Image 1: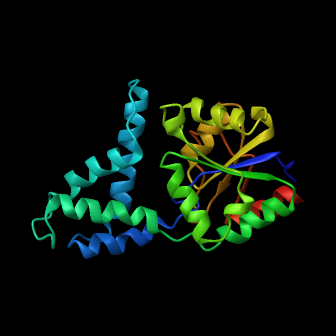
Image 2: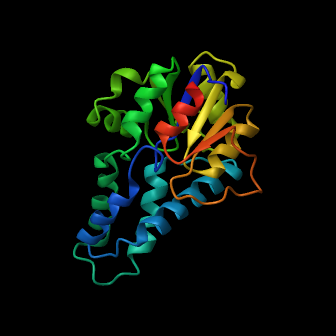
Length: 225
């Protein structure tokens, strides 16, 4: 049984929000829905590259730049290119939660674990997502990497989140659906939980999670014993 942390820091993009639903926005502008994973992966790549080179740009700016390039390869768009980009980006603020998340967050709080979000995106997006699900009152803070100008998995965002929640790194656990995020948190001195919704092997090149489960409720129950 994993020992419950004092604070759970929840990743947002794909961990809490259902990014697959953005496929509808792609189709509405005349692009294939299958572009969503490619676009998101390229956005993470470019944001992390900026961090590695000592620079910073906001998630929306990086995502927009990547999307501009991807959509320019589709000459049969239903809208002008820049309008199509804005239509897709606006969809991020309307995404629903992953189906397992509301029960998982409630179980974390019932176990006495404080909850906050930590995102490479905008904290306002995380806040609105929680509000739509009626969960904003049980999540203490929405923390963004913009506060330190470094994207996860650099160590600064994780350590900043711990300071913001007034806990030591060892008392906090990052919970994410991304192995790279788990690795970053572990390297920064936090514990980490991995949500393995796809049933895939964990990459051996990364530091392993302290606990893993197929969904957030199962992970929360493991922490609560």
